[in-house]
Length: 259
Image (cartoon, rainbow, N blue to C red):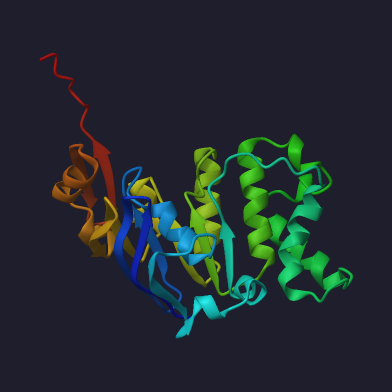
């Protein structure tokens, strides 16, 4: 599936949130959208999954304008894990994940054995099968986030949109979640705040600053000390291990001026 955004602009009042965003996602790529808070990452993703209408520009799925695709058909192609706040769902975990099967069902159609098999498989992938009979609102924030991912996996789409998916997760589950998503072999577009996560998992990244794309390409090429200083206003150290083909980023302590 191909996803293309052409000159996406979002204006709220007199403020220009997005100033002309272009991306092209194809061939089951894992795409990272990075940038500081307020750069427009979440706003852009909301345009992709149709909770926010751009002020101008076009988003296409396989050359079809998204505005001409129904919500149900869009949900068959694209699953979403939005930024976690608090979900007060008084349902069993299993029932929450079953909601991911809704786009594939006719009105009043019963859940089938295949639906339950898909739900169990999704819960296994996020290591939450043991909690499938728990009430969702009794779970921790991190556990809830993994259930919301399982619900998205149950949709069995060709594309997954993630808005800072590792928020509220311990390091173990951050890596587990990203490994799970990477191994789906589908197109992924993720807003990511951790640059080392972006380095580890993304095939390509787009860097946003003040509503503009200031750079894009392979993470190891894009994430330089100069770019990080310009975009994030911090001094970074790029550590490279050529033998292991590993790159990671560390940061110099920030020195406050008393002047």
